[in-house]
Image (cartoon, rainbow, N blue to C red; front, side):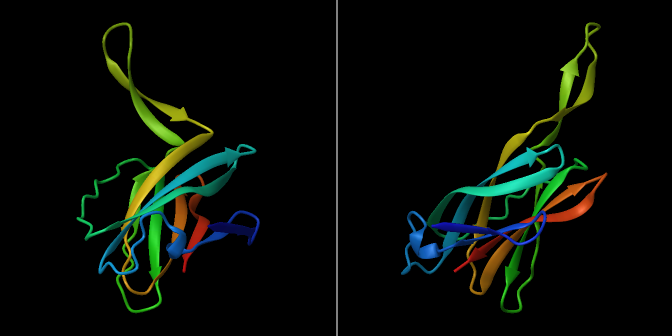
Length: 153
């Protein structure tokens, strides 16, 4: 189902055949793709992305996006072969989180929580012409870096 190859020093690219996606109905007018990605931090710097699950559903996707206020973000950008708005989906970066912690005096403070592995779940409408999804990591220290491409066929 998933074939991966290394295309550079940091970006991994793989291909997902929609015919092999669980519950994919070629006769349905509208498809929603539910994609789960695992993001792992290797050697303290490099972020590796892996598609771990793909499921399809019939129907139209509602816009239920919530704003992300963290400076650490994952951006998923749909790329189309036809003229179509390429609106990024933005998620809180699973490797960099802010948590509220209570101190002894009862006051709450925010602390950074850095992990080596995390997951994101992406829901996307499979529109005509959708060719691929690009995943970008946005951090204050590194800026915007493309870390993964999922080609759809």
